[in-house]
Length: 294
Length: 218
Image 1 (cartoon, each protein chain N blue to C red):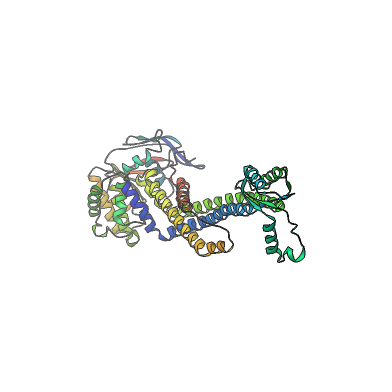
Image 2 (cartoon, one colour):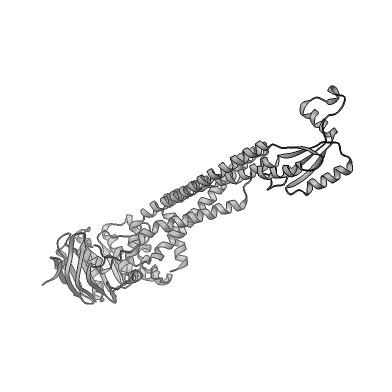
């Protein structure tokens, strides 16, 4: 079998059946576009959840005022706790400024003395921001000497955990359904285009073409259709994200990005869809009835 | 060259052949006649092994229906030229590419393909139509393209299933004249037909299919 003839036939197939080829490319593009957008949303949701979690700090209030040496010792102890990322000391004066910023009133106007306690603000390292992990860190901090209480947004973290679990299950289900639909849709479209050529395939068999000789151009054509579909889907996603989603994500202070490897994966997925669709569809037209007719 | 040994062929509950025996030698010119639906096309299909006998054996050249594998069928068909009533051209490519296809499947080189296709098209009188698409040809021209394709691999047997069924008398005479020339070079012609006027134009062996078997008509 001549490789150059097979390649020539593959591309000639595109030219000979422009309408059917365009429909196949369009179907692959739409399928991959849906799948791609869904994958991006799913992947970025995990990052989005992590961003919200990372904003949850632990506030550690002290039961008595401490001096600079004690502050350094406390800082070292807190930093050594697994999961603690950054430790910031909040003096009584800093606390008063925060109060004034949040409530618009100064203590000096109401009270003679500043009643706010000294505290430490702990940020949590990535990977330790689930409600369970934060509860463990808070428990360890609470047991330390000089610590009166530990505050963090426990209910918010628990809510995020519950929602994230539900979202993972839902996206897994929808993702499988979408991928399945894409395969069925593309395979069906290719099947229809090959069905339209069934008489040609039969003639080829009668002239003495081997199944591989007939199949090869269809497979290459399928890969080519899939690749084009993948490229179009990637371009559409890039346009939508560059012009609409990215500015929006900047406004919402949420980072949403699509990497080049994702686009490469999408094009590869298109090639695979085209190849599988052609392979499945052409098989039934190539079978020789090597059985008795009755 | 062709042998049927006790061949039985059934489709559903219908017997097409039953204990049918036949032998055809190299270079014969054979007409296969019989009523419509009697099994003329099925007889040809058994020869190019598009169907296999329910019982018995069909031998053609070195191939035997009882032992042939899927892999061998394309190679059997390359030794046979087949012409159909409805031409069965590859509608998506031109005359040259239709004829060339039969050579491409054998892995022939480009120069060999070009020279053989030009020779065959000249032989069937279609040199000026090599770039025409099948849709632009008359019935007679389409059938001549199909004949050129069937002959391009120098087959030892040419099977023709009602080749003049869709053609007017002049086109039919042209087709018969081509078959005659091919037969004189040693290729066996086996033509299923119900056009008995051809038998008078070009005498040959006549096999009639009747009562699920073959009978020589003298």
